[in-house]
Length: 178
Image (cartoon, rainbow, N blue to C red; front, side, top):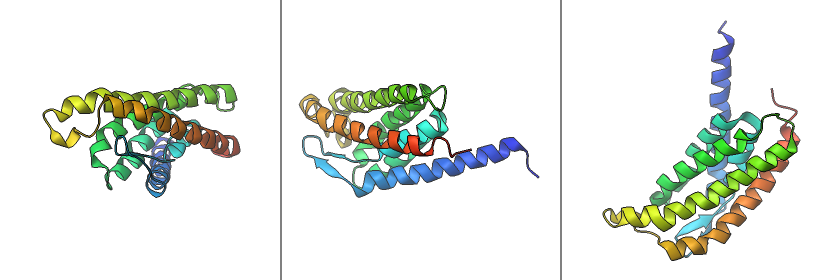
């Protein structure tokens, strides 16, 4: 029989794989284009946030780094770098505030932090990092400061809807997981 640590590690890998798949599907199936930047509105963040609330920061970070990033590889490869960084930090922070697994206020604070990272992170990438990189690597010349401003509200809505759905999922499942 294997020791308990190995089982926990294998279980977490399975949880990460399952939630990363859900995040991939949530990011890929519903893609509403944002013409200003060539990005898109989606609900993949729902599963990044829900995984983090249910299973902790590390699981949330891996789910964020894997699911939505792989989705960007299908049609939006220029956003892979931003997505990997932003969604990993988002997933980590959402769970970081949840010290006691049953505290709704802590979950809400974590979700607010996650939405803030989502909106602010993409803004920084689209307004500053990508334009700077785009001067030497044309592949990244996909956005500018004005386009990043235009994407603030759609990104906020994406984060808000995802946070509401993730909170509902957490409330339903928080007492049922091991």
